[in-house]
Length: 205
Image 1 (cartoon, rainbow, N blue to C red):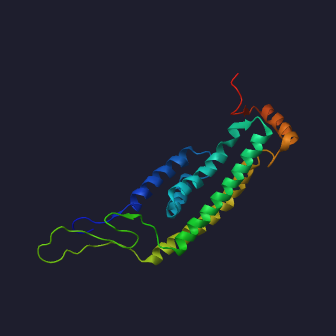
Image 2: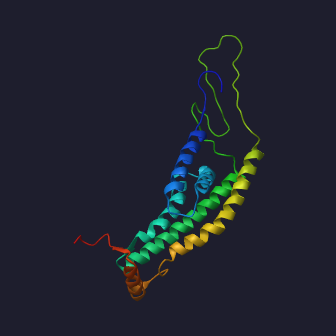
Image 3: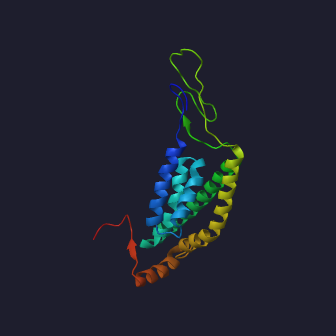
């Protein structure tokens, strides 16, 4: 805080928003992640760009929904599998980036306003009568942040031991890559179980 105009710390509004998103995902998303898992995961992802964090969160949700429909063509199934594999590698790399940024870099508190950025904070007063006003900043030592991120990284590692087998099971509901013959055999089995066969390019009957 301080006199006149000064910087804004947007991190807290962002943290509140992702807490609300995590709460909603914990109640709705068809994944093994609990509401607490979503909240903690989202909190740790605040140190990577928002679009990247959103894709990381989206990946388990997509895996949880993927058995709602089965592709009609083998090439669309194989393409779907390749996309999910690539998506998974991207999500894994993004989680590593979040841990790396949290443990080694300065925390991104999303400082904005009046030429303020990072740890550089500026205030502006149009007129001063008397003594120069003094701003104030409430902060904690950097080691507190490092400790919190270390605890988050350890928590993430323990949870991944549970999440990764689930992700692999969802990814291999059928053949990893089917080919024409393998896909036809799997498609028949899925039809027998009552799964919906879809083809986005097929005309409606």
